[in-house]
Length: 127
Image (cartoon, rainbow, N blue to C red; front, side, top):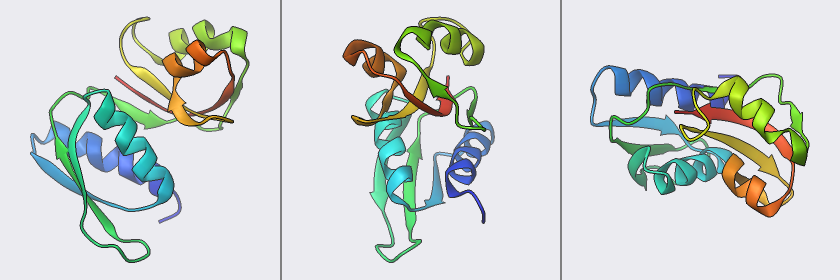
């Protein structure tokens, strides 16, 4: 598997479309950070690490709240003043969904980046 992050989002999206209650994804540091962001924003339920070994598995409880999610490639840099432009490009409405961004403050959402007045690199979108 070349891109574990893209694979994780694809597994979550397809499992939700199949009306499954849970799915298993491979574990990495970035995947755990993104899953915690999704959990904080009520897109997924409980997250449980099933296998602690390298490349282990994570069990994700699904809440049927994700309509679409995907990685953003190439990973574009976003300046502080450009948030509205990229939000309108990837999200269906200004208050619907979120962008997941890698910033100097860590992996956060576009809303948190706007509040902190920092830019970053786009990783994914979810709505």
